[in-house]
Length: 254
Image 1 (cartoon, rainbow, N blue to C red):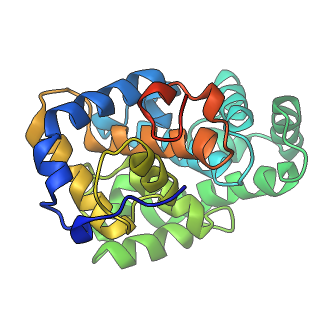
Image 2: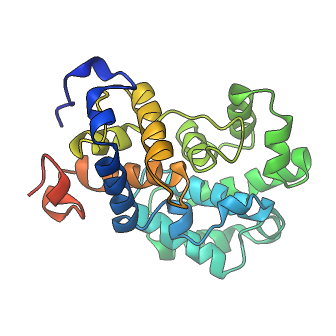
Image 3: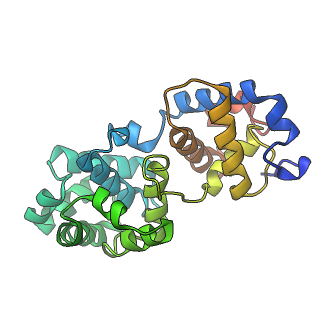
């Protein structure tokens, strides 16, 4: 997809200033059509900041971070949820084969054994180092870089891409969670003419301003960021424009 040109990508560019209400309404539409963020689609109440809800999002992030299809990761998470395996304690008391079976039934082929080993490993380190509480991990982190280091230190399942995905869900909830905007979200935003930026750094700030200054929606900024990422990953990058839920709004659509 060709980037939007003009204006140099500044935060107060003409596109952002002149069309804010329209762009905001389109963000709300994307949220609705994409079923919000991954945490909300999975019924995870991250906004509550409860330790058990944050851990559920960590599990989902590990499953989503393998690079496979979102639908498979969702099925795997729901399989763990149905089996009552969404807490560090329960993961440590289950057997490896049970985890493999859930992943197999969900459609994982290449990563099932690694994930089945990795999940209890993450739970064990979290229990021993932070009393099983990810909010404690965040409290003890000195800054955003130390936060990323501590998360990666939980185990091999915490790949850099997984950590970034996890932290995007906690943007604005954890003070030290400040990951970059996903490239897929930038691509989707450009196609929808939401911003006048060609870099993820500038685009993140433009989208923040757009969301904060133009509406009263109860959703968090990270929700629309995640919805745009899901749109870009599921439709823009795979060029499934004919199936896109907002194709009528996109420069590359209908």
